[in-house]
Image (tube, rainbow, N blue to C red; front, side, top):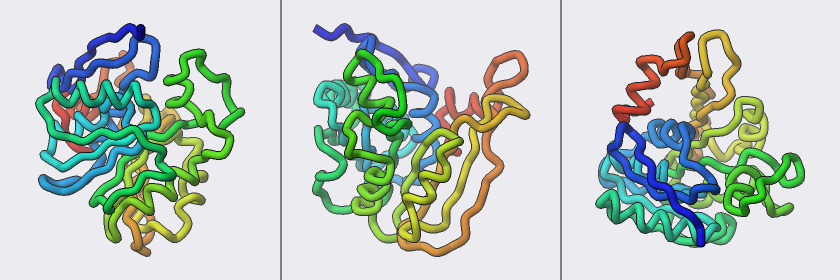
Length: 238
């Protein structure tokens, strides 16, 4: 039997059950949710939702109509339990992103595996291995972008968090299918490289891309900056 652990995020505003040894809800999940420009009543798809970490951070901030999909059935079952724990009415389904059939959404958010199959040392935990890197040799970041494009409405937004060194893969995968691209660097500290970036884009737009000011996460003493703290504790949007 899988051992579960209970955590709180957004300064205990969101409560989550997750596998003790599997994929962990992280700062990435909170930052991704903070960057989604959803409004109350709009539809949101969380692709690769895991146990729902990003989903519930978003739903704490805005009463959207959220659907989460993940290929890992155990994570989906936990997301459903977390739905009850947080008093929300989201819908979570076990599905492959390439074959998920649904009406289109106002917004799509995704925190995809960072590594291509065979390009990293895989975790012995199957769920963590699946979340951290593509296990399926035929699945790539291009498939995630293609699925997001298929599932979001025209003029709807896609929001993705990804390693800073992988921006080229995201932009190449988007091609001309998305525009009005906004790149938001997340720096560990002042003067450091951005290990993560958030990319927002709008389907069927041709507006030029912009690099936004971004967010410095840590002060010199290791504590969070005031700006990062307002997202991680107060649930403010980016």
